[in-house]
Length: 125
Image (tube, rainbow, N blue to C red; front, side, top):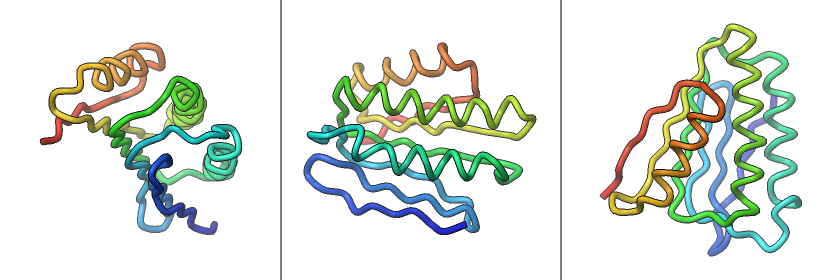
């Protein structure tokens, strides 16, 4: 399976998915003008990955900011992770957020409650 990598811009996060090194990260700001165009290849890659996932998948989400449209796509991606979990594989979402950003922290808590998969919350300086 090929790796998936997208360099960050001012309005899109860096995406690094590598099945072989067990690295799954999305880091930065997410407010793309065309959210579907940006997230569709990410979701498609994860769809392919979910057919033969690693025994453990730790998805690291480290957002500085994301808009409402991005949150819908993040939820779709997290649903794919939940599907992997339901197949009996170990999953973990590491949700990093700026230390004093209650909004991003609460968004992560809402995702965790909605999806009922393991989350860990990390406040970053």
